Each structure stands twice: as C-alpha cells, then as structure tokens.
Length: 213
Ligand code: 13P
Image 1 (cartoon, protein in one colour):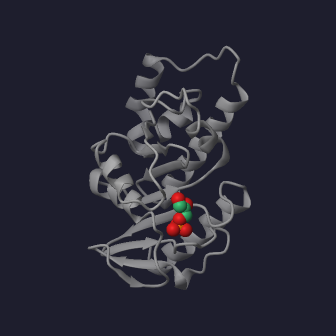
Image 2 (cartoon, rainbow, N blue to C red):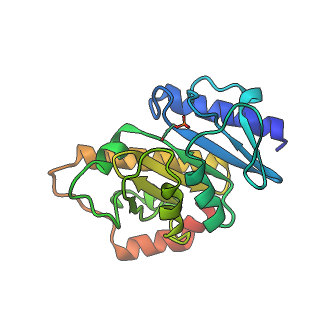
Image 3 (cartoon, rainbow, N blue to C red):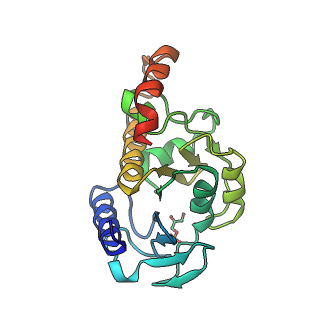
C-alpha cells in the first residue's frame, strides 16, 4: 500500500470506529508504521473527521516532520513498536465497556478481559492492566515496556485499551473484539459464566493467534 492509500485507509477505519460509537469527541488515537517512520492521528482530532493530508507524519526517530501535531499518547504507541517486532499499527480507544472494566476496584490486573469467546483469545489473548497515569505522561510508555512485548494489548486503568496489530486492519479489528468482549463481560456480570479453559485457549493460540495478531 502506498502512503497515500494508508492515509485514506486510516481515515476510513477511524471514521467507522467513530460512527459505531467506539470513540467519542476527541478521544482515541491511531498510528501506522511506514517504511521510514509513522503516521499518527493529530492531537485533539476526532476519529470521525480526520483529513488524510493533515495526519501527523513522524520520521524513524519519532520527530514530527509533517501534518498537524501528533497525539500526546505517542509514548503508548512507541512502546508497542519497540517491544513487539512486527507491529504495524496501534489503536488506543476510550471505548465504553473496556473503560468501564478498567475502573473496577477488584479487576484482576493480570487478566482484565475474560476469555469468553474464541475471537478475543485469537486477537488479544490475556490483557494486563497498566496502573493509572495522567494521559500523555511518558510513564505510560515505560509501564508498557515493562511487559517486554508479551501482550498485543493492554488496558489502561480508568482510561481505556491500547491494542497493537501486524497491520492497521488487524489492530482495529482486535480493538473492536476487545471492546465487544468487555461488553459481554458487563452484560454477564453477576451470572455464572463458562469461560474458555486452558486447553481451549492453547488450541486457539496454536492454530490462530500468531496469524491474527
Ligand atoms: P490525543 O487527542 O492527544 O490523541 O489524546 C486523546 C486521548 O485519547 C488521550 O488518551
């Protein structure tokens, strides 16, 4: 895909997320790897109304070299690219149900999104909690680096998910899958739930996870 095609794909997928309620206002940001740098949504932009020519352009050293000023969450994104080789895109959302779970006092910090369905296991696996820091604080990047690339997605406490993928479409689909599973978890709260078990999860990991992330 050319850079222009990637810009247009980013505008299209971001608008789709916005129109289906996965982001509101100016919440959320998305980045995509290029052969010589990154594209990133501008700070304070609305995912529903991005303009391809105004998307921020960063060089391979993360210097801002074109378009509007990049997202203040650049540290979150950079930590994924630098700890997970093969990452082609990163999506951060404040999607409602995942963010609701991120506010729960008794959430398991090692495992925030329950393995309810095969697709969430295939797309994001076990999702750890990152302790709360103020949005845009570089400490968020350090906390993600501390996971040493073991997880394609994390949940930021009282804030929302950050999801990586091998390309833009994979990262967006994984972010959607994470949010839908969080929604199921909220719907099922208080009910006796049958989770996928160790052997089911291992089979999914063996057959699909590597290809889908
Ligand atoms: P930006 O507008 O700087 O991308 O920040 C939005 C956001 O989601 C903060 O977490």
